[in-house]
Structures are given as structure tokens and as C-alpha cells.
Image (cartoon, one colour):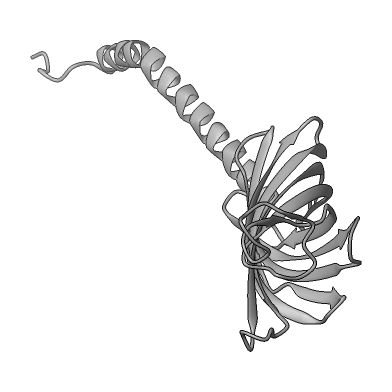
Length: 217
């Protein structure tokens, strides 16, 4: 009597047929999966390589600027308002600044910086500003940054103030670009006959050469 179970040869044929039908789909899915994993690994490597220990980002520049002084009866360059205590132009100044960030470059970078402003005409004046700095590289051509600091007037009369600024750079090459910065500062000056303390707000705009340098780990 013949068995109702399929023969070994028939089972083998069925298995081969199933494998032949499924193999193109399975192989394609496997290749697609491997490609996706490789792409994810490449993206992760690109994100973490710059963020590993040893990464350094330095930037700075040399700018030329000028400011508008509000309520400043001293050392006026050009009075623009109705009297000596209203709006006036400050002296032209050279601004040298440098900063370094410490955080992940793929996010908002945080760091510290220093800024030295030197008047080029009028009364001799130098101001040094240590500052907290943030920076963001938006694309290959543009970087934006901000700073908040405490300006220290070195000459002619020592005093302190508060300042904040926003700037940006358009890169002409990998590490060299054109920069612009807008700053608002408040300085505390000497007393007058009318007031025991003079408050001097200054709005400044500077443009110049921007330098950027990165050290990858």
C-alpha cells in the first residue's frame, strides 16, 4: 500500500521552489538593509568625529568700527543732537577679538573670548572686554555668533560697563571671511556737577576680516 506522505524528492522540490520565489525579495531586502546601516554609520561618524575630545574651534578678527554715544558730555567727536548731552559720534576704533568654543560643533557652541578696542583718533582710549561667546555654523558659507561681556576701560579713565553684541561672517574660503558685528554697551563715567555718576550708552557697528580655525581630533 502506498504511503500518503510526500516523498523526500517532492519535499525537496517544494522547498527549492519556495526559496527561488522568495530569494530575490529576501536578497533585495538584505542589500537595502545593509545600505541603510552603512549610511546611518556614516552619518553618525560625521556627527561624532568633530565632537570627540580634542576638537578645538578658534575664531576672531580685526574690524574697523564707529559708535553712536547717547547722553555723553565728555570727549565728543561730533555732536549730532541738539546739545552736548544728546546724540554724538564716537571716535573710529580698531577692534581685535578672539574666541574659543568648547562644546559640540554640531549644536550651538559655547565658549569664552576677549576683545580689545582701540580708538584711532581723538582722545587715546583702550577698552578690553572678556566675554561669554556662543556661535553657530549655519552652512559652509555663514557663521553667526553672539557675545556678552564686561568692558574694562583701560584709558583714559578706568571704569567698567556691560556690553552685548551680535555678529556674523561670510566665508570667502575655508578659514577666511568678511565679518560684521553690532554691539550695544553701557559705560559708567565720571561724575558731573549735576550727577554723581554718568551713564553712557553706546551703539557700535564694525566690519572687517574674520578668521576661523578648527582642529579635528
